[in-house]
Length: 129
Image (cartoon, rainbow, N blue to C red):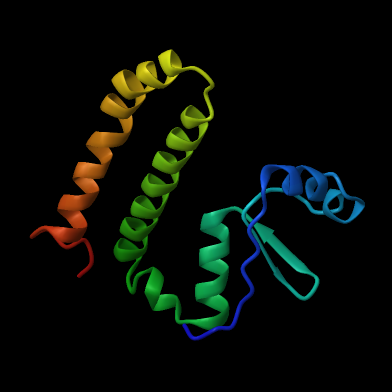
């Protein structure tokens, strides 16, 4: 989209300090990632993407028809769901918990969705008209 931006990466310690600061406590939903434009703050990946597309791009990037928009949203939220499952489970502490995650959550929830997503996006079945 050709928009200049500044990327700030936080260590866990930096985020813990930042997230408890008075400035951040005023946000509606303090979280990473976040996007700030002037005094406007939006958090969470999907709302950030939708905001940037509508603010700086063209809404057609989210689909031209109602059907296209629904399919795009389905893929966005599928990716978001998989990211949440992976992130939550990779924060486990023991090797046994990670093994159980791989055997259950990964095998039953994430991997099948990745295969369907790959087929739709990379394979013959393109999801937008």
